[in-house]
Length: 276
Image 1 (cartoon, rainbow, N blue to C red):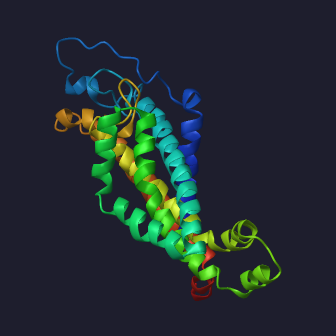
Image 2: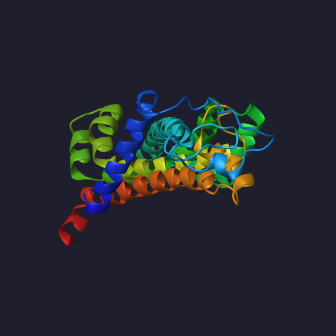
């Protein structure tokens, strides 16, 4: 893996550790509020201090603690969405590419195109708005719009691998369809899916932040990076750090997963290995 890929892996590891050990790392309870004097928080009260390195938000909650706990939501959504989408897409894409014929025409010619015809983020917004805002419905909505990319990728790989000589030999020896598909084809077709999954994590984190920004993700007082960005809009001039720190967290996470995806692509592709 190249240097940027290793750097992305380090950043991702830090965020995962922060998500897992948030109660031990966070200096304060993320929903505990400091008492402000007066009706509105002032610039002096919100700005970073020694006791609150990233400052306080408009309700007097520690921003550092909320950013750390916000990693839990982003990592949880990213992992669950990618896992569900990849499993569904891998199965449907593999079946479509292996059997061909009317099966492939139904899945690839009809079902895939139906889901691709809808703008993905608008479909997710509509689903979450209909089902109700919650992390479970958010994961469901993002999984529904995310599996098609994995299915199309897996279909293309299976169409190529099924023509290899070792698959023909297994078929000639009397191996069943399930054995050929899961024992011989999938292990040799899954490499691009690994790269797609790492890039899909970046998309899932960004989509979660977008939907939470619109109020369709996790609900208050649970900390979420997207919700923190939404709450900070009114204080952009007075306290820009309320927008900067959760925004940096989203940017670093998405950038890190993209670095890892590019690094995995080079590492798993023999042609690019030789060029490097």
